[in-house]
Amino acid sequence: VGKTASVGSTSAVGDKIDYTITAHNEGNVTLTGVKIYDVMFKGADVTVDGKSTTVYEKPAVVDGEGNVTTPATYWIEIAELPVGKDAAIKYSYAITQDDLDAGGVSNLATGTSKEDTDGAGDAEKNYESDKDGNDQRAEYTQKLTQTPDLEVGKTASVGSTSAVGDKIDYTITAHNEGNVTLTGVKIYDVMFK
Image (tube, rainbow, N blue to C red; front, side, top):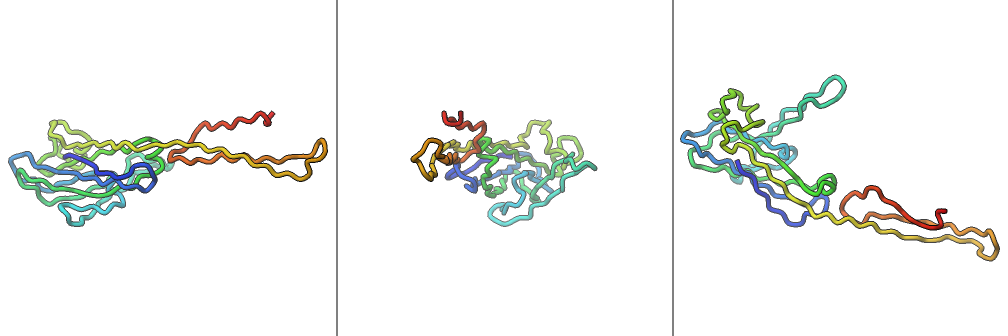
């Protein structure tokens, strides 16, 4: 299993990353019941070799206190993959604010088949590890363009300014012009004294 990405702009929420996962049969038997797992399949329009396919979901397991004990699983299925052949799985992912704040999007795609279960006997659990080293896991990280930009402006509202004690009401506006969440923001002004 391999994973690549094609990107245009990666600097704004909603920009798209177009992913291609390639499932390749390097063995000497036709693989059946092939499953490709990827959490990014959630809500995506996924195609296999240019044809729309169904995304399956195993819901998250939640304990009595509302904590997720096992995250949800998302996968697509390929009925069979002949020896030496590829299947191209494509979909797009929209960049979120959390992705921009993190500076990138990392993701893992994994694959299993009925014939290739790493001896575990359970293809669904197989995607957690690749004990025989036959590349059933493909991780891809897409770096994103971060542009932090704090803009500060100051205005005043005044009534009378002709006597001692007359007031000037100031407004300082701090505005995030960048594409990442700003933290630890400090505004300095000697008049704060």
